[in-house]
Amino acid sequence: QVQLVESGGGLVQAGSSLRLSCSVSGRTFIGSYMGWLRQGPGKEREFVAAIRRIDSSTYYADSVKGRFTVSRDNTRNTMYLQMNSLEPQDTAVYYCAISYRISRPRAVEDFGYWGQGTQVTVSS
Image 1 (cartoon, rainbow, N blue to C red):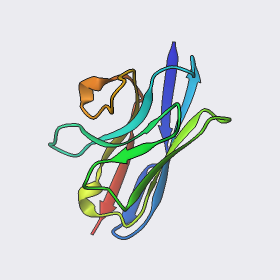
Image 2: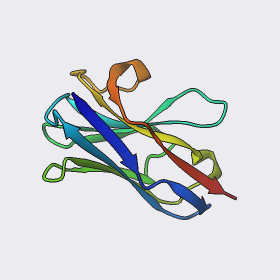
Image 3: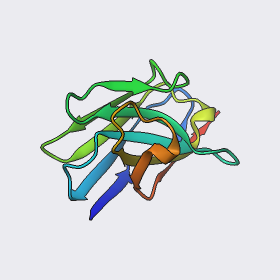
């Protein structure tokens, strides 16, 4: 059993920063990748960023590249998403998730374990 709990969401103005956290408990050393995905109002859930467990290599969706940074602290079993220069279109529920895929997971179905999500709202 593995549990993922996101935190750090909130209401901010455009141009602000937020840092999301994803705490993992239970069976912590599972999966090949951990990722962040989001679902905006009336939109499909979409990939944001991911980090590979073995070497902490990262990759991002084009829409957040250069503004968001994903990282992890293995000693705390926690993954982070630093979000800078936030835009109203970043408004969404942000989820952390774990994937067993060998190659870079991006699709929602590539991820098998999910947190409950944390709301991020960016006002203009």
